[in-house]
Length: 401
Image 1 (tube, rainbow, N blue to C red):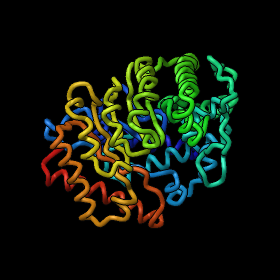
Image 2: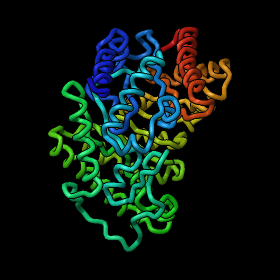
Image 3: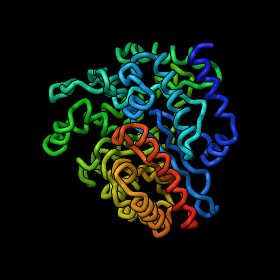
């Protein structure tokens, strides 16, 4: 029996076990919580009115698996056999070490980090030792660029690398696991920043609005065209999209509503809704504008939004009527897990639960996110596993989901 066959067998055995069935029972079915990236983003299938605690999830960055499991990050993104081996290894490791609510599902998303969308549009992608895929420094769009109305994905150079990678993983995984062809999960803002450059695009919005909108029109059309091409290639109809946004606070709330919200709304309508809206930056001031985007299932209150209560104020009473179905409260691992005492960890979780009570948020996830190496690997893992227990303790003492 090959190593991958053995790992697939272990994975399927755990996935069929009692503990995983418990975890799966917590989440809505339909849209999969594993999608464009390899981390789980699910929507709870019950509310606080049930009297049950809301789900808790914990994730690590790939750097952790480099230390703990001996994973070569560059090879993970360039060798399909190696990718599947270590995807299965770290999912099994997490499931056994963290008593959280992240389930094992049959899905295996093929993902190349932040590079997929801009890479397909021609941005040069670098695969460097010890690093996740990253872009070359020089952006590919300037004021003289011709932005085509259509993109021919059938002859796309980037996809010429992706397709055999995907097909190899699919062949290795077997019929009981579903390998997901890369999805377009980055929003128009994120793609525009990558192909134009962060500084350049930010300036465009003030001195060349028409050019900024031309770029956003281009990437939005490309996203829809890719969804259509992908559906034809895989035989799967388009599903609700994800919208990953990079450093939204670079732009003011007014700029978000003027430049990005219309294109996000267009994508939401095209896909029949948004599963997960995400930003790496603090969106506290932007929440009222994001609330105007219809069809959002899960809204990310990310790690840089330190004061979750302030973010919830922006929801007003819209969450109950037309806003997101659930909030994912991401807790910065370094500040609130690795560097914090247990009492400080408890106090921060209590503040989130209190804010949810005050603002009537009845469906959410508490999640530790972005953990990288700080304490040597194994100690980091121990701290994260203990954090899950601490959240459970606080939920129990609060008698609140």
